Length: 602
Image 1 (tube, rainbow, N blue to C red):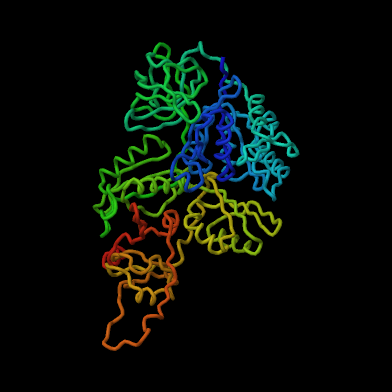
Image 2 (image 1 turned 180 degrees about the vertical axis):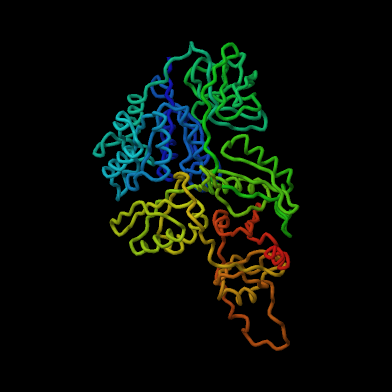
């Protein structure tokens, strides 16, 4: 009889989690002998490959001796924490992957704390031991200290350790061993993670921990069979969040084999399955036998901490680039996103006659990923500056606080302290070693809006910033917004080199020559703290007399091209980002000078 083990791999961004999963699949027989195997197979989404991070949780499985090991590759960024929390509910253990040089990072701490609270016993994997600057023994001490800080039990503190080089598919029990393959990791999993207990004779209980969507079969529920056995033709019910019980019928049942979903008619206790045919099922609800329905405790989904306005594009260039531009298109797309992402909240709003939506999520990255997916699908949308969500607790205003880890060369240590001080950051720790200074700050989430771009510029690209949600604390006071004003186009047309040349000495331009602009569009950042109206389309006056080489003196500095995240961080509350399939533009909410003047007076 095949024994079932379910494990999740958790790690900070870029610590080698997806690469390790690749080799686990290769060596676990998930691919045929002559099958061509791409790299980073678990990062199947185009965005994941481009950014080098895991965004969407995925399931796969391997077979080792008489064990079936279901592996869940989870997001490494705290903005996708709602996915991580749910995934941990359906696994028996976690592989905690830590870089042998960098050690545990904020996202590691965030996800590890969740797994420890659930009573899971992690296996620690020290990865990238081939780095010249690896300090595996120091990192192990740091991991142990982190376990202690997170109130790990004595059993959890007695964690097994495996050393790996994920890109080579090698694992070792000791650093000095000669590694050949991942056998030490497979054996450690088998030895330290007990297989799921046989509860096949008990009443059926399956809690939905993840959702997928397919245009042909609709919503797909994914979860582990906690007890009983699941038959496709069984009489089933769903125990809903409102405590009601409704009948259900599964039209398609699948299990995970390698990277594929294999359609089956039944599945045993402990296995992870995907089910279609239950249209309105949501995260945390229980699928049970109609004869003996017993709901499991509902999963808690953390509340959003950040919100943005998604507005129908009403700029002068609306409809020139995208296929989907109406409120109806936007509403349908957001409803489709809610089918799989329960961490999002959507609320219909109206802005001065223009319809839009208030979207709330766990962080700026989560919302920007949604926008990037939409623009690639052909949508046009305008969005506001991200804002944090405040709470009133015991009649006090509370705000979300992030724990920020900053590493800078020693020469920029004062700069980092000064920047954090302006943003109400409170230093928790400071360690200087090998010409680098490491800081830990507790800082309001709103203090990090727009911080990254300025931080990179002022540390000459040598600073490293990571952060994760910490907790809600008392409101810390006002924080100054962007210090500089912007350059606003007062003309609609095509930018001219002559006009841009006159502007570049006192501004940082976002557009080059020959770019279509409209009135009210932001074309650069002013060197002063006031907005600067300008005509970027102005041509040099032509005369009958022209000196030889008169126009050769124009040398334009290449414009700053903002990414989507940089654009969201840059804007103030009276500005918007216009997002289309091929363009990211910044604009004022009110395009004309008269409209802005009236709004300021109001």
